[in-house]
Amino acid sequence: ALSLSYSSRIDRVPFSELNTAVSYTDKYVGQRGNPKLQPEISNLFSADLQKQFDGSKDFKLSSIGLSAYGSIDKNAGGYTVVIDTGNVTYISYTNIPHTWSYGGDAYFQLSYLHWYSATLNVAGNYQYFNPENKGVVYSFYAQNVFKFLKHHSVNVNGFYFTKFLTSQGYLKGTYQVNLGYKYIFWKETGSLSLNVSDLFKTGKYRYYVETQGYHVNGIFQYESRFAYLT
Image (cartoon, rainbow, N blue to C red; front, side):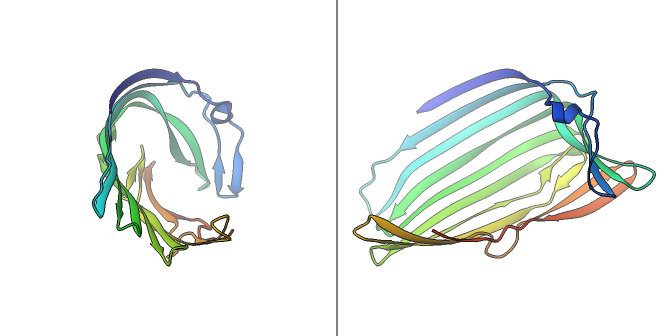
């Protein structure tokens, strides 16, 4: 099935992004709105192709999907960082006059000998914010399910993406791997699952910002490793 779409929209600015009241994280970091923000105008287009397969071989491709997309935006909303004379960092919002991007992605669903199935997704696009902040970014996602001993299965999934551009810098690339185990019992009416997120504790986002002559390298470390018993 092939589908084509185009849309144009105007997004109003939320009040929270207009409010000038400062919310402080600590005495050196705060967040505030920008009352001068203008509505964002977006023009979006996409082309999607999906194909289902009824394979009878041991190794089979269940489905495949291909997409191409793009956007042209005026007054796109984005974050901005301002540092005052007291070295207090304010995170606020700004309009980016003209931005555009285009790219595509592909996903595949496959299975093998009834004991393995997977969903794979690869995406890449070109982003433009200004002459200094432009380039290609891409990402990869995979989910793998291994079945064994009839009622047991293991799920391994994760993602990786390269640096993600912003109007003042970029987020550096990162990855994450999650692991799960499932046991089905009581004639398939009950199940026991154990899932562990961020197995290698890589749930951190490194960023680079250039503003007002400052060059800032920072990192967000999230509490990303959890274990769930269901």
